[in-house]
Image (cartoon, rainbow, N blue to C red; front, side, top):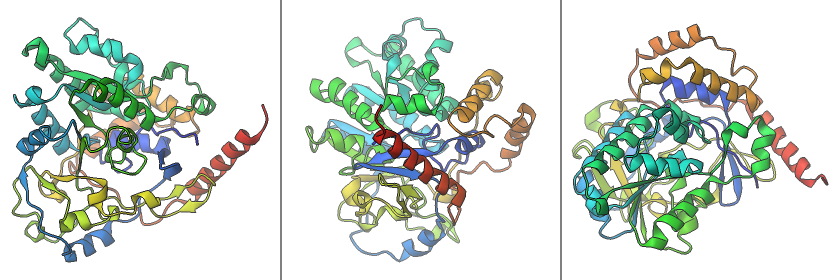
Length: 418
């Protein structure tokens, strides 16, 4: 079934810019043949109240995160982990990992979610040190299925960092960055029907890049994607290529909403863990928990246009069957959110383009906010620098109804002879 992905990959971002994008776009992901529409997250409060009583399984053993991840490359061809998605702590960790001198000794490639594979040749030239105008390079992450990437300072830092690292490495150790998003010319997308006509599949694109550029060449890669793209046995990109390349990928998850809203930091079961640290999931009480402890289920529409308020069956498993390890970056309630870089906040042309894109695919109020209103919100957002996942106990019935109608319209159009 056709799907398209919203501009913002993660609905739960604390960043103002991402929050504005969320208003514009519904998120549709395919998982195990089911079209999943995450309209709104349910309240996370109940998860925080029950998680502390969980005792099933052994105690996880935390290890220093960077050395533990690098050690996994001795056992696996691929280490897959979440990218920042507005979390400054995760952004900082990824940059520290890549800067580690041992990283380039073990890794050949980095496949990223925040890149349109249409521009891979230009990206290769830039990463190799050739003279590529930055305004041209921006197309890699600004013209793709997730324009929220174009609002990320981390993304801009990432490409520049890898380019600079390569200049200090011998040719045989230089890193290559692989764009995983489908090769789509977004300048040709004028409306929702243009999206429908292309039938692009992000999971297939991500898996294809990994198979063609990494696994078939016996290279090693770090994957930076949202965790839902990485989970074993779910229809994710990783699970798709694992049909031909099994047992080669170590999947890492961060902790989502788990261990949030605690009365004190010392009451956390991670209070004595080093920061940052990595713990294996298999056989532990943490791995025995289900996905709902980390990502509250949202509202989804299945391929027959029925409404559900739970995860698809493929995700209703213990976490140890979906991921291999957990990354801990410090107290969950003290996580920082990524701020909007000045070069993006001041780029009126680009902001207008994002607003136009929202209106283009069906959100009539997307372009109504004035620059002054947006600037005021930026200033106000500085009041709270912490990353948090908004808690909305009930889905919006109007959004749900509209999503169901969109699904019915797509089914009708598919069955109508052309």
